[in-house]
Image (cartoon, rainbow, N blue to C red):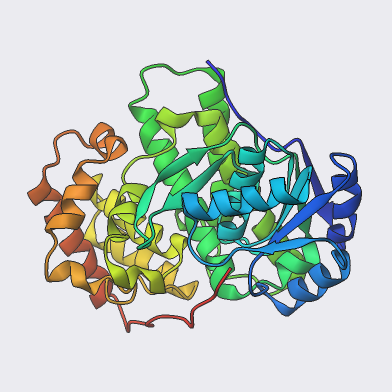
Length: 367
């Protein structure tokens, strides 16, 4: 039995991005910088420009496919690069991470967005060319170095920080639920659940987290960003593959069948999945409405229409079938059939739509 638990080194602090090339030099002599087409914030773009001036660079834009990873891996080989530095949001980091693994060179992750925990994990989330989720690509190691620059993370747009909070909340909810059905409890799973309790204090409204929405001070925002980047990855590594997923990600993965989902971020889609999972566990209408209103205080619309997934209502069958086939959902809710899933999704959508004015979609943020 093996466990890929954590990055080799995490560099934190004000101006930490200035240390990236020093860390890369300890791993290789000729780095390749992989970055997106746009920075997550003006602070991130400025800091990255200053830190990586003159470093050979490749670009990644859009969804992460095997073809995109292979293209970047080919650039690593062609240039004789012996270390990859990824700078950007989750998609950029996953693409760069996959390329580094394919090329068998170390990887340094520099997240400019806290919207996912991609900077600290040993997997890449893959999609097909149409943007439909196609599964995880496991890599051999977590990143060798993760650099968390407090100035960059504090300046990230609210939408990306909210998405990270909701993705982290999803990890707490899914691991706790999956652990109930775990055939064996061991110290690693117990440690994962203890970290869930720690993370919950930052992201779970059930224990009073973020009652008025996202924090405004740079120090609070940076601390929250760090928590939602690193702790979910540690929790997943400790919990193991069989204990880190339940229903919420199955909902996300199925919703990617709908073309309109591209208007939403990963964390926004899994937030709807969290509501569905809560409903499957028997949560009351008041609980679901209260949770949806809390999500809206973070700036996230939670109805299917707000997420760009209103087409589900016209033909739910493909989405429900994809959800029902998910092994993690089947383990967590073995007695739920397609009709039951459809009923739950309709109930959640009806409740959150009626919970208050639909805030609609935020302007699209790219990684």
